[in-house]
Each structure stands twice: as structure tokens, then as C-alpha cells.
Length: 78
Figure 1 (cartoon, helix red, strand yellow):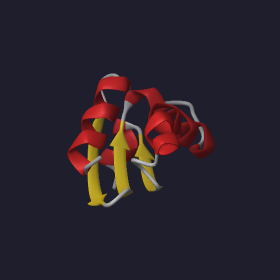
Figure 2 (figure 1 turned 30 degrees about the vertical axis):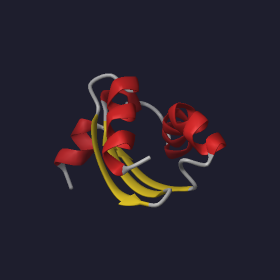
Figure 3 (figure 1 turned 180 degrees about the horizontal axis):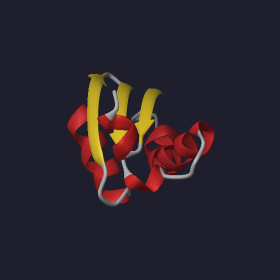
Figure 4 (figure 1 turned 60 degrees about the vertical axis):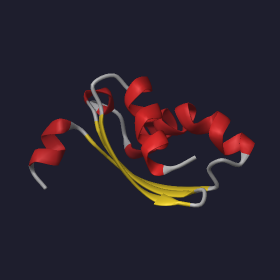
């Protein structure tokens, strides 16, 4: 799996999300901006993302993930 495939997967699963991915060889850094994160704490946001990556992690296509998750309002204030 490459970075563009991870990006496409997450954008198709988390409606209205904007995803930026970097990495290769099963290790990825992901930044996600989505309305879906509104009202969720950091752990719940990560659980949401991991739920969509679970099959790729189980197969070994993804080994390591670091992520930053933001609501659109949080991202604007960076």
C-alpha cells in the first residue's frame, strides 16, 4: 500500500475529509481534517481512523501509523 492509496481509502470512508499522507514501506504519517471529529476526544478520533485501516494493518500492508486529527475549525487556527 502506498501513501496515495491510504489517502484514497480514508477519504472514501470518512465523509468530507481532507487527508494528507506521507510515507512508504508500510509506515505512514497521516493528517486528517474532518467534521466527523467534532465532539470526539483524541482517542475516539484515532479509533475512528484505525477502524478504517484495520484490514490493511491485519494484512501487513500497513505496519506503523502516526496521525494528527483536526476539525476544520481547529485546522484553521493552526
